[in-house]
Length: 343
Image (cartoon, rainbow, N blue to C red; front, side, top):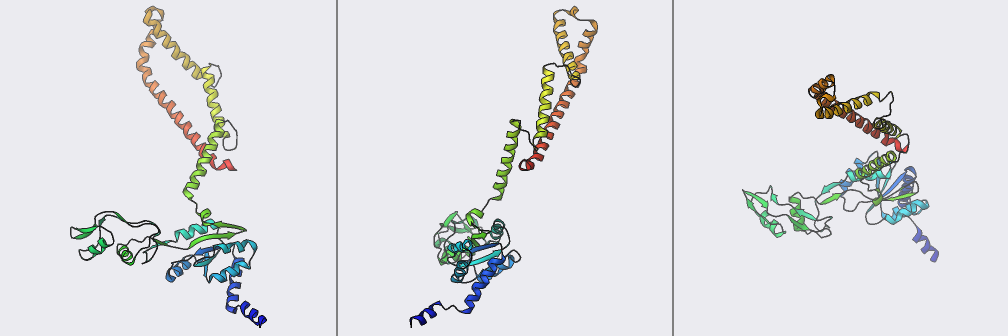
């Protein structure tokens, strides 16, 4: 009798065995296996989601005990996914990267009205302003749901922004009906990805939820700071050598001119500098004694303000243009070097 009882308790219908084997085959055939929550998703909406995922992922809905048994009889790594099997659960099979898979599921979410007895997923706020309702009983219905309403200009208006339900509150039938008529849809329907197994690693949803814009911004900022540090520390690398050489050449040129070191490359600037200094000295000397300078030099001083004023402006503009060009070259070098810092 005991043997017969044992045989009866361990008997599993063939269809369940087939279901378990099918799950195990799908696990073996895909690089990524996900556990998703499907609570509250209507059958029609679930079918649409499965259709939208075609070619990227397969969704299999079956009993939790069969999912649990299939995972339990898989490898030790996959077996750990059992702790995510709860409530209404489905399996997701894909060859996509887990992070890409998470993004795909998030983009596939759709807004929906909240049902009577549903839990508010967030604070539900009704904004003040006109509605599309004509005057009628709707005014009383709005007011009885805690929404201040009235009639203005022949239309029903909401007179004050009001939070009608806090996150976690149970929404009654009356409020759910009013929210639906106001086309307020606080519920997001979608496959709730709890965890994904890939190559011996389990990624929970908190890890997969990455803000791509912030992530890319952080990397870009890190590269820029690394580049600036390398330039300021004069650390040569493939990405910085061009800028460092340009900086060194500019600094050496300025040093040579300020130190009045006579070299072929700088002789023009040095002669121009000397000429300017000579004219300034001659101007001061002539103010003290008109005979201190020659007539030719005096004529030069008399004509230089009109003749040299415009060239000075042009020279300044040219110098600014050169500086601007150099700045553009440096910026181009920086932009070109950002990606190669990590080569």
